[in-house]
Amino acid sequence: MISLTKMLLGREHSGDRLRYRRGTNSAGAADGTGPVVVWNCTRACNLFCRHCYASATPHAMGGELSTGGAKDFLDTLAAFNVPALLLSGGEPLLRSDIFELLEYARTLGLRAALSTNGTLIDERTAARIMELGVSYAGISLDGSRSVNDAFRGVDGAYDRTIAGFRNCRKAGQKAGLRLSMTRSTLKELPVIFRLVEDEGIARVCLYHLVPSGRGAELSDEEPSPEEKRAALDFLAEKTLDFAARGVETEILTVDNHCDGIYLYLREKERGGDRASEMLELLTASGGNRSGVAIGAVDWEGDVHIDQFTQEIILGNVRERDFPEIWRGESDSFLHRLRDRKRHLRGRCRTCGWLEQCNGNLRARALAAGDFWGPDPSCYLTDDEIAHGGTLC
Image 1 (cartoon, rainbow, N blue to C red):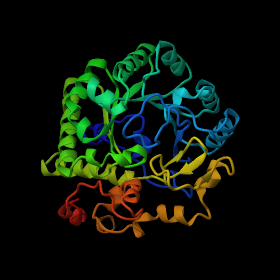
Image 2: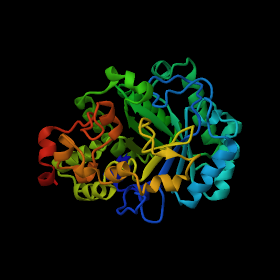
Image 3: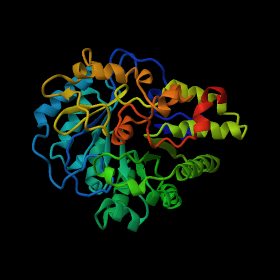
């Protein structure tokens, strides 16, 4: 994640201490902890989103972890001292035992968050997740009513999602908006940020498109480099505008570490006084940390380096405990991944910003045909990457 709020304003929010610190242990995460874990606890979903990396289905698939198996898994996460657990899907609220699992996670001291489409968060559900100590609910919305419902594949999804935000606010549950950055949705940014301000939404995360699952069919929706730069310019100006007017909304982008470098270069070119600290933050973060400080487990218990790279399976939590799989003491692939700078190819190998980006998102490189090849979503110019070392 790239926090524009932290980069441009120096303001710290809850995730920044994990995001901007150096040092890893033998398991790839910061000393004393395991990784942040995304658990896709079900593949079932009541929507049919065009970009869904899980290729979610209307009903749960056979083979999902049982309640008992899920609790055993949560036990291992608590013992591994993972800093955060994000329950995703599909739609996690479709798991019949979701509240039981959230309550169990709380008894273990796990910091749990939800990634949801929000359409199932009625007043009772909002109050329940608040009561169970859910630290954050990330609710997906991709534009105005017509754009969102077309993107999400179900008429009426927009209105139910807005109701979900309002029910969270009424219950005192912290919630934020999540948006996938596509050619269609980027046109909706002004509408989205008006909504964010009107509804008092505390956090906005904008995810770059990943060609995984059904997202692999959206090549026509991949923004051009110019469109991505224009989007970052808009987000930077909106971050500054919100701050000037006292709007307390955190703004972040996800899954493209070019964003941080672009923001730094933008600040440096303008002679801004935050450039040096921005570079320090990017270097401390170390770029992409899939398989290092973030991992994923799917509905069947398979462990992946992140939620987007379903093709690569490190092991299964039914057969071995998550910490054992994650430490990967005899896993040559994980050893290479955690020392990836020596194994990257193409533009990534020669990029002057490798210390700050770490090869970006490997799921996109894999989709392009070479896991160790360049991330095709990089929008920095050849001149920008060639002179990275001197520009900083």
